[in-house]
Length: 194
Image (cartoon, rainbow, N blue to C red; front, side):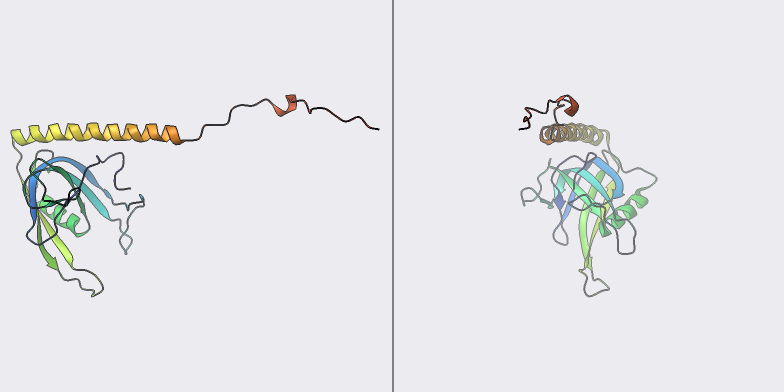
């Protein structure tokens, strides 16, 4: 499944064309972990290495990225998720290393941009879409905004998980009622021999 107990449910941000970008404030980040498919199965690269992903939640402050829920350009104030996986994960880690020793954390400004397509070595593969990240220092104001949004995301996550638990309780079959011990049940009327 795309969302689990650790990730708040929200819509995603998409960059569809070279030059598209989105800037904003990081509100919540799910640590790097192994990616899963829609059924919750772990993803692996052909060579056997785990496919890693990071999910960033960002309040949009500018750009022309697409809100997956509406298909329209994301509006300032929208809180959208960026699934950082595959080649994008490599670019994310590279940008994070360049930003070091500072930590990418709640309140950090991020710009995500679709930079170029790189032709694949194998003609059967699609071109790799290079989407670069740039991080900027957080400010006291950005931290306050991000913490407020993070608290809301966590509240929504807890509510979502409580709803899932309640639904599971409603749909689980009840254990069978304890019945009388078979040895104590009378066999019923018996027929008399002729």
